[in-house]
Image (cartoon, rainbow, N blue to C red; front, side, top):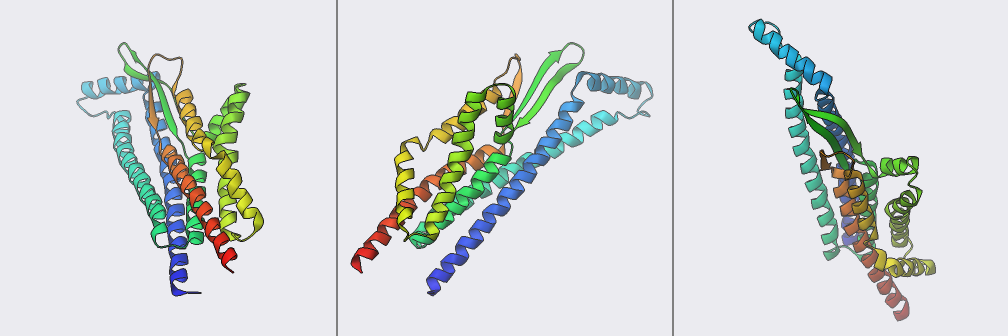
Length: 279
């Protein structure tokens, strides 16, 4: 094996491991952020706000001898949430940079290693995009004497949303989201990775041609996830706050890496075909 090939393989492994670590950290950070936001929402429910107001009154009457522990806890949670939000943003940016590095690796990697790297990156991004929360929804209302009261809190991911669609009887929409956001992307990504390992097999070219035929539908998974986000963000309440979470960025990274992997696999097989003809 040539030195260039060895260095290329080391680069693929290092970058894939880095993306896997960033994905794992992004998932853990998103779950922690979700937990903090839920705790804040619980403190903003009507009975907890009323309890906090009574403790404020008791603190005033006792000249500060009675502490409002609820208000102190809310302040700590607000600061923790700001820190976690910045951490989530940094992780999303780092994963984006790693994805750009994978895309740019075609400048020095062989077509086979490049296809394998993009396929691995797309698979990592897809898995994290599916399991990581994509949208946080808080429904609240301004109540007299209490102020801003949280009525409900929910953080949703693609897998959980599909389960909810099935549970609510929205079977057609659930099946469409399941097909275009999970089944086809997973099949495509695994097939491209398989092609990079067996580039000289006859069925490898057939797989690439099959997914090339589906190329006109390549952005449908983006549309489906966008539709899902809009669906989840809508509600019957007059007042709600929706916040995009890091899972969406993982899924967007998957889309670009998957499209690039398809093009790389096609070029790889064309090069392999020319080599066979020249022999």
